[in-house]
Amino acid sequence: MAQTVTTELRRWIIEQACSGCSAESVLKAMKDAGWEEEVALDALEVTLRQHLGVGAEAGDAAQLSQATQLAAAAERVSASGRPARRALPEPSLSGSPRQVDAGDRMVDVLVSLSSPRLVVFGNLLSDEECDALMAAARPRLSRSLTVQTDTGGEEMNADRTSQGMFFRRGELEVVSRVEARLARLLNWPVENGEGLQVLCYKPGAEYKPHYDYFDPGEAGTPNIVKRGGQRLATIVMYLNEPSRGGGTTFPDIGLEVAPQRGHAVFFSYDRPHPATRTLHGGAPVIEGEKWVATKWLREREFS
Ligand code: PD2
Ligand code: ZN
Image 1 (tube, rainbow, N blue to C red):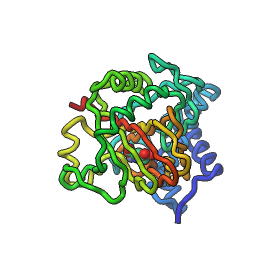
Image 2: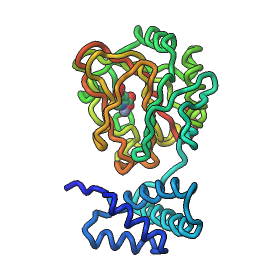
Image 3: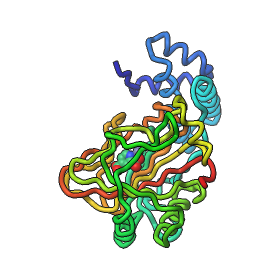
Image 4: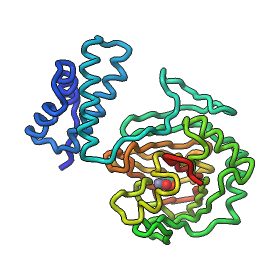
């Protein structure tokens, strides 16, 4: 049965942190009370990270230091059994601005979530940019492939019924412009991005829920990550609007992002693990067509 982190549990975690308990003792108390280790660790990390974010403005220094120590310890315990956390692409949202400067354009911040780390942006692309990307992609579309994780090759996949193509990085002026904007928006080098992918979904086409990172348990992953390292983040940009269906879904949190032209959904994953809650899919298009451009961001230069 799914275990829910209640307000009471969050309050209890913060109390333990502020009174100086160790991460191990808090984790043990939670496991003794029937919490699964994975859920307990996530609850500790997320609650304390949020608490530190709020408390940094208003809190008592000694309590904050206790909470900081517990958050760091929770992270260490957690890291011992799971893939390590990494530095991540992240927009500059401290102080909760309505808009962020993406260099050549001010981009609206519509939604920001901490777990999963996810931001919905508005006004990221102009109508002209959307049209130019669709027009340049259209003659090059073919049935989308997915990376074959056991070998590192590519395969046709029934879970993904869109058509797609990739631009090389910097291939066209509009592609370079969008890539430079994303690099500035997400504070991540252009060189660490894969080429822009454009997808077109006709009625009935969908992309079943999946993770974008490469599964460390699959045999082909070491080969795939030789080029640029792991994927750390995804931004899906909407180029047009189907009249019904085609939202980007996040089943772990019951979220569906509406495909609105010029908008985008960004999400990052600090480790290649379902604990990031970044399971996501493209819901079937019911009426009209759906066009998106996706950029995946890697740890290192992707060449
Ligand atoms: O088109 C989408 O909404 C979608 C959903 C899930 C795109 C991707 N994943 C992707 O390009 O990875
Ligand atoms: Zn995806």
